[in-house]
Image 1 (cartoon, rainbow, N blue to C red):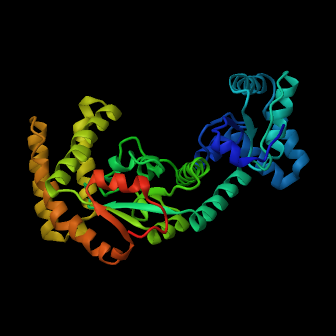
Image 2: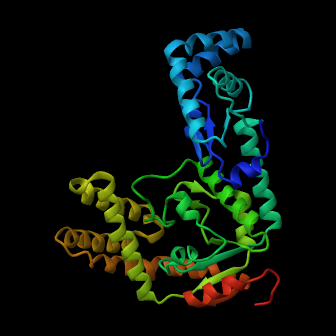
Image 3: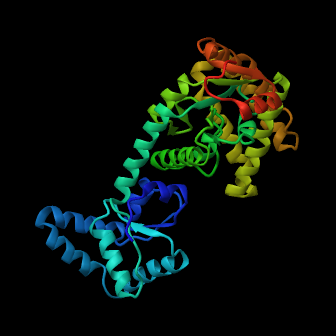
Length: 366
């Protein structure tokens, strides 16, 4: 019943118990897992220190002393409840060793046979990294690019075979892309990206994986270097969008939508102050690139827009957005894409790009 069929676990979204300590789970985990630890963080620290000083047998004895009586009964009951609700699931620890074996034994003593994952978290993580290396070497990628504000993400979401990196990173991708509810850990981000790619390849092995053009960082989440390198060599679909449409799209995304997100996160009373500080912080991130005079000009436009917004008129934000797009983002985009023009296999409006992506095959001339 125990398994090392990691591909099936991820492709089929098999539910899993992660029996590692909470601090380990927070550092990195997998989708469809719940953290039901054998030991709390402080208990794990004590057992680890004992292991280093006195060896494994002493550490096991200490672990049984710490997790005993009502504490043990409560934890076993949580595992059993999960198993009853998810009879097709599995449990794992870091290496598939002692902790998951103890959980499995205690569940069996409680009348519940439940399988574990051989090799545990470490083996599954290694499997994902190996799969990413293989996919980046052997599976075709197709990159959707376009000016800032071109609504690339919205178009990407209409494309079968797409992985939305920004959605996984919980960030809109630019200096102003922060979302109030934060981002996943780096390892969580990597795991989710790789699993999404594996699923697409498994379900449609002959179709390319479509990704939006991104810089190395999406907020604080970094693209795995092997993926970034593969994306930098992949063919490109270039989305053309009218300049004023890009202003309106950016206004919708970074003003109207973001202000609502702050209301949901901190409540109406604090939302506008948090939203305003978010925009100021975002602008300050590109201060050096803008240069002093241009930064001062955009900053003044932003402050005027915030004042009008507070009084009920959010449209003035379009002024500083338009200025940033024309004087900063567009020149930077044009400079970057001068180096990659040969990779463009199609260029056009959203409906045409979508139609082309649906029928594109690797190796077919543009």
